[in-house]
Length: 334
Image (tube, rainbow, N blue to C red):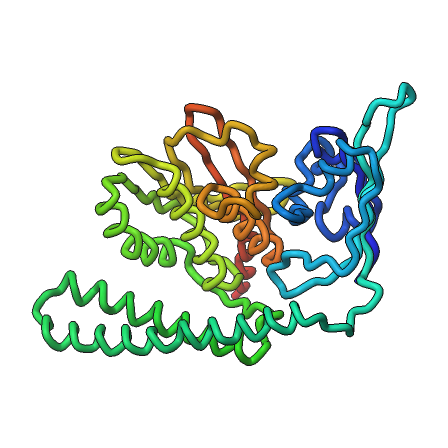
């Protein structure tokens, strides 16, 4: 692992970074300056507190050795040093964060071993009821063979069960570090999601609409991208009361010479009052936009894309996932 370094101001916004951090997490430094650091690096949290903010407020250096960083591509154990920075008059000006590989990557603490055992137990615990659900789906298909709408739902259930079962198999086989990238249709994925979310939205009395734009094929891991979209939709549902509305839209956009497929999930909820709270909400609350946003950001980063969020108090929240479109094949000349 490469060493990284970045600097934040007192509002936890990036003020600068080294070349390694820029290449790994940002792309271009100018895109990061002024943005909250957790938009590019997972929040550094301990005991429910953002340790960068803690270091700035306390004025003392913070060391986190063997820190388990959240990472979409797998576990990442690092050593972190957070050093407060003061202005010429002595007032807090921010902090410098240095990240390095853990001094001892091979040492396994009892906690890490227990977590791995727990994860495997959890995977098996999911697979067992999954098999029972699979049997129930087959029964419903045979019992209500004439109900076309029900059969459509059971078909989707079968597909999702198979996909989840395959995901668990990869997880138990310790091969989840590499995502399988395939060519797929984003609109087909959204149509499947619309079926999965329609009954839940109806039960909550929440309106949910889908707009399918004219988008090219996408190269990515459809399972993880679908989970990212579902997380954003579920978080919007949790943020809305009865009568609220969610819109899911696919579109295409060109930026800096690159064409993107954009999936946007918007709601008309209260909005995120304090965007800074989004960065530290992971440890304290997984029901708001924070956790879904974190998952989406990690998935997009692994796929070479990005996430953009717009939120205004009283006007709702809109989160867009940017996936690189597959360039069309050149036409053959006869």
